[in-house]
Length: 363
Ligand SMILES: *Cc1c(COP(=O)(O)O)cnc(C)c1O
Image (cartoon, rainbow, N blue to C red; front, side, top):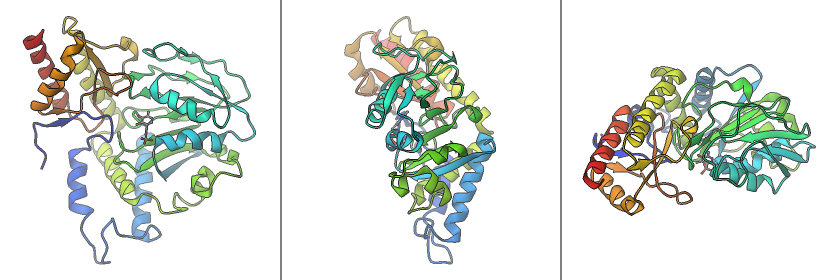
């Protein structure tokens, strides 16, 4: 079904696991005895509710969800949450803390400024963000409603080596490019969210995990369908949820569980990343990884060519060898290979082999 020699390294929407594509083909587009396929069933009916509940159950198992947390499946992407987080979590507070770790953190900050005063969490304001903020305790003003971090910066190719300790201030994370890529201590977070098209399935869905006590903070003016509390009360079905994306997320969660869970995902992702960073660091300077070694993302490998004039020839030669979507984000340029859960080791090996070959021919 899939050409074995073509690999898609896009940052998102990204590759899906082979088993998920096959199950979707065989299961989603077929009508049952009720005259409906999974795409056609009402969201109020028992069949869709069973799909929703089993997806949630499987996700809770993968995450070892602690008691007192709720899972939401909402329509839309992560950027909607940049506004919905302050709308739902500020309560009476005027301020929230944000860590500026790069492109996506800055977009979250710009949106939050429309709702509250943004306090800079320890970081590196203004500097080129090539390292994560320091771990350990962060001394934050107690009147901050929450502290927002971006543990994996998809564009900058940067990941937090460890989570900060924000004390009494609830930690909120945009985990769009890292949720389910490795084990995670959920009890450290007040809320985290991830849009689905990187690691959880297809675009149109955002998964949220939220500590129940934070649900009481929503401003009265928050629209019902955008209120975390109202959606929790309505089982994520206050209005029509993205049923197809939820269905596919359930298939992805099943595949992760069958493949050994988050520990197995983490080990496989580290191995793929090590393959590519070794190809970069071992190239004698032909390729360069701009991010400090301890802070490199295991799933978004960013690199550059010492000779920038070789970027276009590199991309063209890679595509002719079946290696696609390696151009870096327009904001930072260079090259980027995204190696989420669904990318097999063989994809990383193929890219590393091509890189060595290209360096030999053009170095
Ligand atoms: C992709 C991405 C986003 C944007 O998600 P949308 O679903 O397009 O809104 C936000 N944050 C991070 C960390 C991302 O990787």
